[in-house]
Length: 346
Image (cartoon, rainbow, N blue to C red; front, side):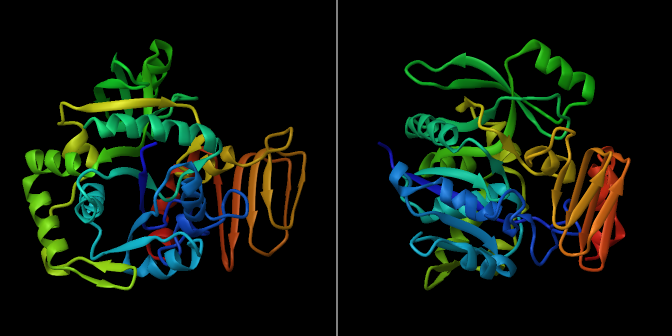
């Protein structure tokens, strides 16, 4: 079995799940689905008993104390302290530059919910086998609705001797009509931002397509220093990087893009509506957290950290109470929460 190194990316401004999520404690570090935080759940899914090595965590300095407080004691994790947020291509490259060239990396966002962990691990093993053959592999998440908030992958030809396929093309976030067309046509998957790479192959592709990022990351790592399990890349060199996502920098340009289809009860918990859909609900579609009373309600989410909330006769409503902040929105309005003055200026 290939030993897989989880590379867990921590970041985000905490605006889309305001007021519960904030810059000082964004959603990866909150117990939004069950009693385990999304970050801790990501680490626990990658169990050494299932062929995973100790994880590498990439996080900004402000979040390192949260990372360390939520890591399992026996995780053996390394933490790369990102000097500045330069998007996912540079963050992944920091981890790749710290690993042996033949190490198989499994890149995981720290803020996703995955309800079917065995399906996730099976997909990880399939992706790792492809990555060992120098494919750059994305998880192609089986779509369950015509979502407009995700990019899509178009499945191409099968790759002999594997469970994977070539990626025929990457598709930007579509409008609703196009998303409905993708589901009707079939062969399209959500691009959830989970990838498997051989570290050396990823750095080679990055050097080919974005040599500026590759060279700056390598220089920042070479000039960096260790502090216990923390590694600090050189901040001045890293600041010279023009940040870009791994999709734009590498995946959409490489001739070796592959995908592994997977249905694993996945959600990026990208807003309050997405969290509502990920939570257990009653027969009327309601979900509650805290001291809540509902009468005659349908499709209502109430999340309170203390005050009693009583709701009567409402439908398709989301109410969140966090300290002195109260946020009320329709389900359709949940996409706009991050634009609120309170969220932006938290």
